[in-house]
Length: 495
Image (tube, rainbow, N blue to C red):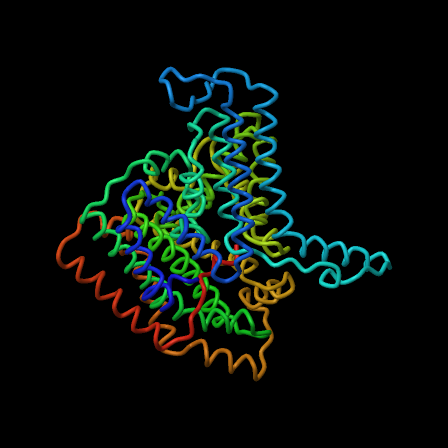
């Protein structure tokens, strides 16, 4: 089920909120869990079974981690001490959680990719293997990358002593399955919402902020991201775009993925406020970044923070010398690429970002970033603008393999971006279609919003009459536009 659909807006959401607020406070987590399972299982009810298995595993592992311990306050589950060594039982529970979640994720997300890669390797040496689909064709469950990371982080936090295990399976199932952020994030840490699962406040102001944030997010998706989609699709599908058309298409894709994903995040945060939860922000003006390290401190914050805390730091982070730090950084970015999808294009995308981050570390003084160097220089405004522009263009180039359907397709588009694409009748047709006035106007509007407008979260932080009017107007226009276009799923649903 998609947020930007009539089914969700006019049927599922009103009915869910009616049931939620009609229920007594102690039953609201049950109601939220049930409607979330309906939301998730709408496309395929079998997906619900998979999520329930993951939830059960981590719930039991969390209780095993603290079993036999006594808290100072009777009746309360103890929290593990950060200074004490862990027992074999506790280590086994953590390993069970990690292996189970990664196994589920690995099988459902990477089976087809691994089988196809193995078949291609066999053909390269003259062997013949069955087509992967003839043996077993695995369907990727929606949002499995998000909820497995979220559920697994709970056990890791309990093991580290960063969170207290939860006794109520009802509350834990609610945490894993909350429909606002279930299938496309942000990845919510348990310790950020543990208290809210037990007690939360519903106020008119929070609900108003939630509705306004939802309206802004829907507008980002429907009015901007979906409007730029045809130009991006056309260029990436073309075999011979011109230099200018290629750049217009890639920039259109850069804006499309940002407004699509940040729009979903705004809607998720808004629905969270309506339901009484505070979800972490997922973006911080990423296209205003100066340097790649700065970009990753602004883009998809919940994922980059997850990879930092649960992969990069455990590998040693930057504490084990420059060589080990470089390896750790590259490994994390490759994992980040594979997390996004089971294809070599995502490996290339992650590898490019890893290499760019390594290049920054090598060229800059120890511990410094490009943004810090720029802010300390003379002519700060000029250098800041130059740094943001260069970073944006580099990010646009790295989006090519992320969006391309194959490495060969990415190579062809890179050639066009560098001015080496071929020119024929198809090139002229692509140019004419991409340079439609509507597309150019939307690119200009997207650029103005990206580089001058406040963030959605800041815009709704202090509501005024005119801000409410703007948000409600955008919400209404977006809903009307939905009746005139084919429903387009969110880009991050595939992950």
